[in-house]
Length: 175
Image (cartoon, rainbow, N blue to C red; front, side, top):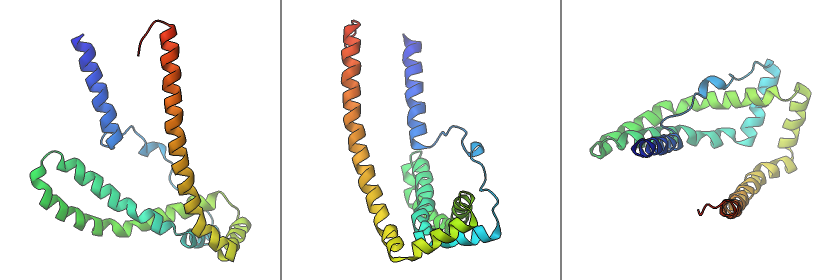
C-alpha cells in the first residue's frame, strides 16, 4: 500500500515536471537538423518566411524559454525574484539575436518541401493581393479552428469519460 502510494506520487510528480518542461524526454536528439538545400531555394524560402512573418511568430519563443527557466528557478527560492527578473531581462536581450537561427531553420525546412519552381510560384502568390490576404486571414482562421478544436476536445473528453464510467459499471466498478 505504501509502495503503491509512493509510486503513484512519484508518477504524478514526473508527469507534473514533464508538463512544466523541467524533465523532458530525450527529444532534442530525435529532431534532425535543417536539411541542406540549394542557395536559390534557400533565398526564395527566406523571402517567403519573411513575407509570412515567421520572425514575428518565432520571436516570443526566446522570451518564453527565458521566462519558463526563470520561473522554474524562482520556485526554489522566491527571495531571488528581483535578481532573477533583472538577469532574465538581460539574458533575453542577449539571446534575442539568436532568433535568426530559427528563421533560417524555418526557411531550410520550408525549402526542402518545395522545388525551386514551386518556391517561385509561392513567392509570387504571397506577393499577390490574395496572398497578402491569406497572410492576414490565415492566423485568424487557425485561431478560430484551434478554439473550436479545444472546445470539441473538451466535449469529447466528457463523452469518453461517460462511456468509460458506463463500461466500468457494467464490469462492477464504480468510478
